Image 1 (cartoon, rainbow, N blue to C red):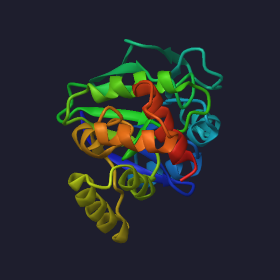
Image 2: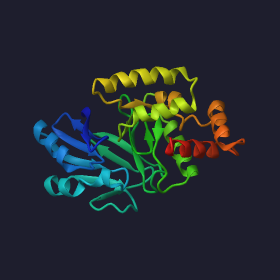
Image 3: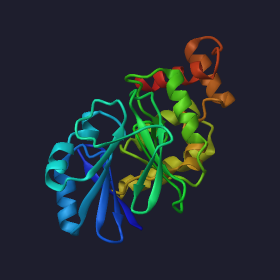
Length: 258
């Protein structure tokens, strides 16, 4: 059984989420750096048994060689990716078992073409490890995929249970909220969230995990169908957007240069 899910800080703003079992094993998600993982595992007297990888970027995979050499864990990652060290490839509708919990694999291209997420509907509350596809109040840049692909991926995540806890891999929340307020200044739930998340950061606390419900209420990249956000996109374009994908693409381009 899962005892806790702990964020190991890495680099400037990454979190390496660590799932700890009742029997002293652990599973890490997207270990970009091996050193803090090894330190945590040793300090907590754990055994690293599993690794989940969402996509190929080095800040999510850089720690794999050292961790594989030291612990020989099961390493799950996207099929067809360029990641060295994966010993079990996963794809849409596949299943990964972690400490007696079944995680479903969701293909969510957009940030990269090989991106996957891991969702456990049976946990209470449900769990989502979404890498760089969905952030708290934001989404990943489109380095490889198209706006249409990212829209489809985000819609897939938005359909998960509202109570689902969203474990993304970067502490970008306050910067994302500043953009969200610029795009939708009259959103009172968003204003409240800014205050709450700022207090957490002032105390040195993570703003994560979020929830799907909170993202649906405050994240412009899940709310691109809202008239006010379509209006904001129209102001940027100087014309009415042709469809929801163009609304999303306009918001994403705006955020890229915000």
